[in-house]
Length: 466
Image (tube, rainbow, N blue to C red; front, side, top):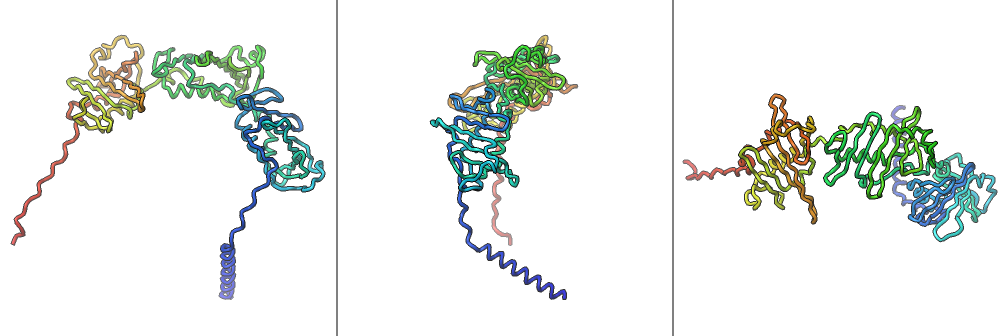
């Protein structure tokens, strides 16, 4: 019996396999016809959209620059991504299914429960789509275009757009500014106070310490301010009463940004109340509740923005280096073929890999301790430094900018394995790992190219031995 059952199963399997192969060999169905569209507009031509819902009417329009604004129920900047996406979606509304070809009773489908009106460039009258109830099967919505008898089903995306609130369509990052235009920062909180200024060669802390700032951290600080997003709008046209109500008349944090390109300073005020944090600026009439805690960045002290590198430059842009240490005095130059030479005439080639390793060591050289406002250079052996390194870099391009950085090496503490160094452009000193001294060549021959290996001459033979 078992054998007979096995045979029957095998026959069934073969028949099923044959049927699948037969289907697989059938010619492919013709490509599905493109879905019919209820609207065939050009998204870029849409100038105004009104959404009428049970409880409110939202109106959006483009300004002279083509930016989206909210016009009703209040005037405010709109979220460009939200409005552009909605305009794209509405421009080519696809019909999922025609429910009533020759028209039926719209009330049967609760039409018009909501209404979409779209104005396009050069058209005085809008195109209107009347929207009814939701289809419970797939969340699509019943709708009818004004002037069209058909009742159709539209994608659930239409219902999603109509379900969004005024807040969803608002621009949340209302305090944006160009970080590259900022040339000064002053921060004052209960526990932190510092200011920084931008110069041609980078950002510098001015108080409470005078030091080079880490540019990436300053950029992060400015980006954090400019990207503050609203979770809630506490006041639309702030008054002195609004400021007092939100505690901003005695703000916990105050940040002033110098933006000379715009011929103005912008001041941020931030206050953390019992249950909410409030933010406003001198450049805005809004008070918002941010979606993230600004004090994450505003609570950092000046030391956290300080550059720890002794010298900031790009090693791959280096094309010249001068080293002085004891009796050693080397001038090394890089040719167009990326080879290094011992002389300006570039006749004697040097070991490029050793030179570039040395340059990268200085590029990554970081302080383990700062010596601010040193009393004298002699105290740290820098009146007569034991070594001096100047690295010159050149940016690529026709108008290449050449920059040089010089680092002096002073007294080393053999017990602590530290050595004091000074960047010629900075007034303070650094303590770094004294292993740096081991990387210096002792003499010129240390960086010469290795001698090519001499091949042993072939031994002559007198023929096979008998």
